Image 1 (cartoon, helix red, strand yellow):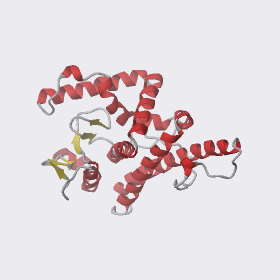
Image 2 (image 1 turned 45 degrees about the vertical axis):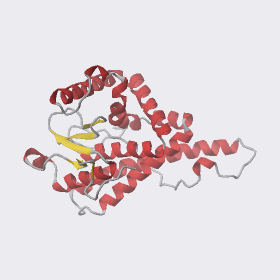
Image 3 (image 1 turned 90 degrees about the vertical axis):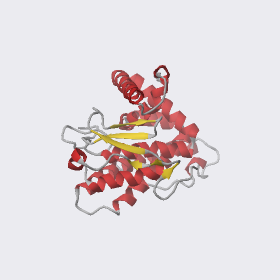
Image 4 (image 1 turned 180 degrees about the horizontal axis):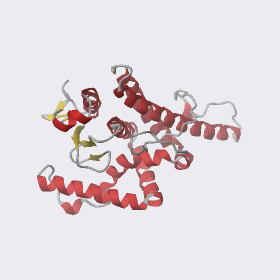
Length: 276
């Protein structure tokens, strides 16, 4: 692990929110959420920029290790926690992360081809702007589609998680890797619960975090149920009935939920389920 001091610095690089809390930012994002983003970013060793000139909720730049969040997002913490989940997954198992990245890319190309192309071009333009401004030193001809895939995964994971059939196919095909992903989801959920303890009850900040908590609890439940069903099927077909499948040892049980996970919002920022 990279060593850093208590202020979240390493090699003179400051981690956390690097955009000052002034002007329009202070009008659209509360100081509590600003401080919360800062707190979450430091152990991830990433920087967070808050801007007003992007069409999406946020994106990740792997060259600078920066998460850019739109100040107009109804729930900027969801962008941060989604990135945190992939960060945990990569630490738990690089192989599982690569498997998940390939699955999301294939899913986007198959089911959301136009949006996939639009996002690739938007990310490419973001890199070009960063290169032109001197923010990063990189040749533009290196910004290929393949180079941008990590950003696509970080920012399109929500669409993948919205599709229960896609998740079911993933779990059935990649059961071992799904265990790593479930663990990453659990670690993010644990941090959301810790963050809630520091937020004043009844505030819009608590509502924002409770929405994140609900999303990740539903996602955790969905993965657990699918993996548990798969394990039962394997046990039923096995002559060694009664032995707990190895992939489920040390995995805690979670409560069932009938609410589908969704990162979708309507124009007013209300959460939408698949049925809506």
